[in-house]
Amino acid sequence: MDCVVHVTMRKSILLGCNLVFFGGIAFGVETEKSMIAPVGFPEIQAEKRGRMTVKLEDNSAGFWTLQSSEDMQVWKSVSTLQARGGALSYLDPAKNKSRTYFYRLVNSNTLGNVLIEEEPFTFQSSVPSSFIQRESVVFRTPASAGGGGWAGSNGTINESFTVTTEVLAPEAPIRPDSVRDHKAFLGRVLFYDKRLSADNSKSCASCHKQEKAFADDKPLSDGIHGQKTARNSMPLANMAFAADGKFFWDMRESTLRDTVLRPIENPLEMGMDLKQLPEKLSQQPYYAELFETAFGSPEITEETISEGLSTFLNSMVSGTTKFDRAQFIGRRHFSALERLGETLFMGKAGCAQCHSAPFFDNTIATNNGLDIYSEDEGMASHTKKESDRGFFKTPTIRNVALTAPYMHDGRFKTLDDVVDHYNKKIQPHDELDETLRLSDSVTTPWESTKVEQRQTVQLDLSEQERDALVAFMETLTDHKLIQDKRFSDPFKR
Image 1: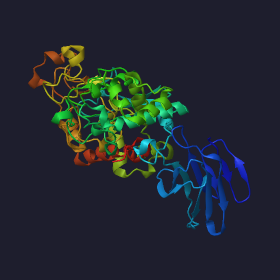
Image 2: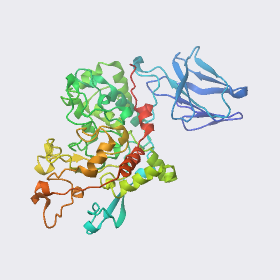
Image 3: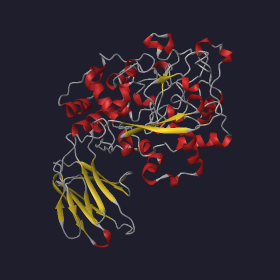
Image 4: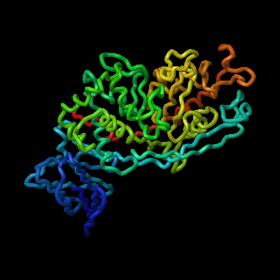
């Protein structure tokens, strides 16, 4: 039963939400099919000096954890209570009256005592209004007056304008749907379960760590049997907004449901036979209940595994950064260095041409001049076109301060290294992106110019400007995402 009471010192009102407010105190009861549902209404008795008694009827003698919070973001366990004689009660000690405290009860009888006690079951993430539109800044310069492009050889921009297009927010992160929450929770369990690998040594989370914005801190991640992955692990947030649905560095997959299965069957990564995976997971008793709650049937299939994982990933919305707050309250909380960095990012440095707000990514693959000749074929590995050699997906740089090392092979250890590359070290690859070339392609086609005569963009940024760019990129860090328990490891270790 899902029931809520609004309690003040004087009256009680039934509300259609999952919180009980008490004199500035919120009290929530989380219930699920797999958990013990309380019977009737929680009872809260007010006493003097801010004390309260909490009572909840539960005829199953189950355990409940009482949690408190000052901001409804970070919850701390206060006490674990067992229902005795069909009810539980807790006398809260006096609190500092100058503060507001929130409380909630979380059922502690998790599936087979395998999963951790705190299981927040709400995955509908709020989508920041800044995500509803995509803005791309286009520059016109004396050297490219006929259209958009980088600044000319003198680095001067004489005109800029903004192109705004609507971004249709997908249903996954925002549509209220309890079934979707169950699927996301199932996906969370699957994401952290090492049984998805052939030797039970690797999970999806092994290469996509929450504290690293679901990227890895190694150039190439550790796969099964001591092997290394072929490329650096990409961050996962905001995948629900991936335009045109192109995934992986080489953009070889066009649906997220297919994408989540590829690392599982990759012999370098998790090496699991997908046909054998359903039977393997069915040997764990708790999965039958999780799949039945999510899909209405305990049957485990490749399709339901994929849907659970992709729903979990779709719920990861990263939009609570210093930059996002600035969209609403202005740049006054930016430091002078951060403001300079934003100006450079959108202007002289040209970063926004490939990393446009609000997602700071791009819908196309590019060759950004890492090498004159690309050993890694990139997109060409599946398109079989030589002209696609060295083309890689433009990743989001949201949370980029957390996702080092950088590039598809993790060659750059720091953001300073990345800025230095674009500042003076772009290599004249045959298929180098046009925005990074300075050769006159009208009179002398780039491909016909000798490699040693090709000129690439030289930003000539000062040391302060390089520091400013890094400072601005650090404002794109979402600290809430990396601490959000909804995306944390649900297993007891």
